[in-house]
Length: 379
Image 1: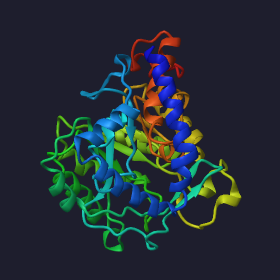
Image 2: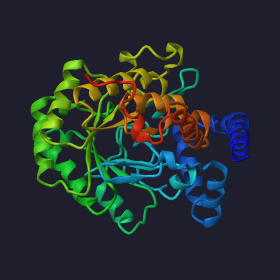
Image 3: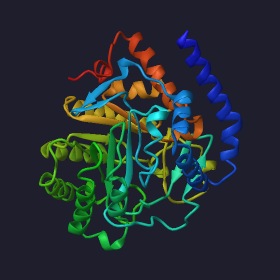
């Protein structure tokens, strides 16, 4: 009976979003829509009734989805990716929707306005199931955000995504490293884990920490301030050569980094998985479907290279349970997503979790841990 109710709920929610809610949202330009919906969300979850209604509409949980990664317990492996909640404002909503965790940010040491063109830094590629992003790490800065969140109680694990301020004053290597350290220090008593974002494709000076010497310097500095109870992950770029991937992975292993987030956005010039006529802006990078294959291929490679001994968080093009399961069976311990919520609606989180339960059962697994890497045998 419960199965039938959940199936009916998912179908009704999808149809309502697809044919009523989404057409209204898509009347606004993407960045304006994001800001408007954020304000609506803040109002909606400010009271118990709103949070309770979200749970009735979207939440799904099953014991087979419970997983423990680097000592942190998760009710399910589906999390919100960094890039959606840049100020850490909607943390009360995520547990009710059904997320097992959420990664906030990216946060930079100092306040960062992001790239120019406020209101026109996001673009929908509807047929491509993608968002072109040109934000450039806009956020209020670690000091202000940490001050607001320091007394907040979170009911799911929260990740703190740290990046360096997107400003020419921070292009010097030591200044960049100090900027990361400032964020980690401000959030030392906030959140469950850190993600060091070395891969934003929309910054002025590119990705300097792809270079081994620079990455070694950053991780050496992090070694001195890491907290034993708080894992540190590194978020990697999508558009890397195999040699670059291996260099980053091997350097992270040397410094005993807990895990890797695979991957960030892909630049249009590096991906053919989108409809070219939808690309109406000459800057930015793509989320969603165009990064799906890149992400899964990197997960498979990294899982093999590390012999499954490092945590992998898979990101990119997760629209349904099968997409998430493919990443898990390739070697991902946890999954993050954003774009599918925009195109499919918030009910997609619960539907992915519900689908994962069925896929685990079909393959004879009783837990997520058993499925990790099961279709990517180690040599």
